[in-house]
Image (cartoon, rainbow, N blue to C red; front, side, top):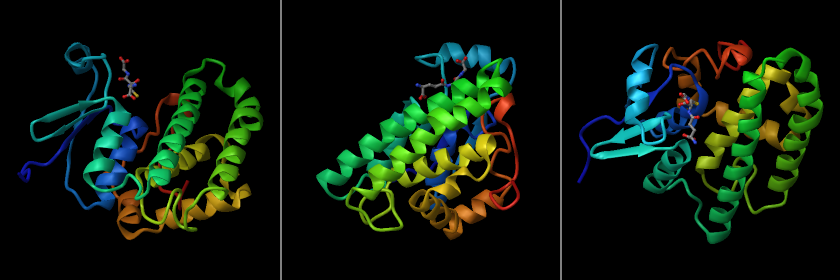
Length: 220
Ligand SMILES: N[C@@H](CCC(=O)N[C@@H](CS)C(=O)NCC(=O)O)C(=O)O
């Protein structure tokens, strides 16, 4: 049965783990509501969340917790999970690799020694992650405009989000990686994605105080 209600994203008013969800809904042209969590409201809501965390995604009767369960739900529902077994496997490999990479970014962003650790992070984990991603995707079946296979998958969204986050730390570092840079540019040129990036629907804050910056790819 079709769902006449708009899905609802419950999350802090930042990009963070909800951003790939927003990007997918925007590209699919699905209208959604945001339930931004703020201040004291969080203490109450936290007790209602099974793992004390957000995002939560509501789609009709469904309440989905855990960001990756949400990404995969959207991928299954909207055919963004690859069209061959090899594509599905590559999607899941990249999903986990990107998740590790973004967790490391988050840990650094929260760190009290952010400024001291920043360059070390760029020269170490960030550079090796970008090189590994570039090498891996150059080796798997895909066309030049997609991370995996020949069609859009949820990895195009997770991958772009990760590459976009690197700008806050390391400016144009992605430009050193031809394949990643091409994927980034192709993705952000998609008309609905471009419109979203330029809209005020997009939270200005990436994740946490040390890694905040606003604007669109064109301006920041
Ligand atoms: N494994 C969870 C982690 C979620 C998570 O850490 N959420 C953070 C925001 S990004 C949160 O709710 N923090 C508030 C808290 O822990 O009180 C997921 O992927 O959804």
